Length: 160
Image 1 (cartoon, rainbow, N blue to C red):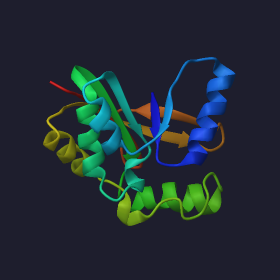
Image 2 (image 1 turned 30 degrees about the vertical axis):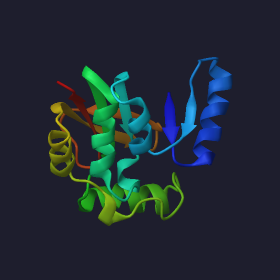
Image 3 (image 1 turned 60 degrees about the vertical axis):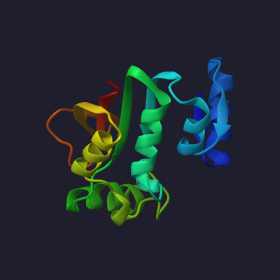
Image 4 (image 1 turned 90 degrees about the horizontal axis):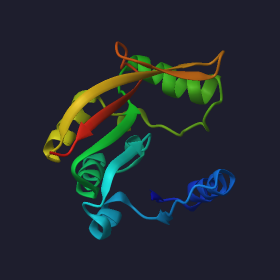
């Protein structure tokens, strides 16, 4: 299953589905409304690169927790809020390298790891690990790193 609030991302996802042949059900929905219908149904829930775009990310984290079965894993990724992240993720990615449309991210909506960790705890989840993600614009490759969460980062949590 995959959800998104926008029809354009869902159209792209459906094209990938046709190319891959994988059976996926895509639905236009918020995490909160999807959780009302499908609570406790999933062993793994991913919420990647979207928390910094919603009005209340804490409610999305809570909805993701509701979707997960006890013992299941959840993965959250987002962008840190600090001067380096502003320089790399906004100025660099949007204005210098043109990897993303200008205005994709608002600095005030970026999320510090401590904030996401609190929302995870508040949702009744256990935070298991945090890993940084770095991007090399020359090789155009991402790399996971244990020692640098200053720009992009990923958190793995578990529902007890």
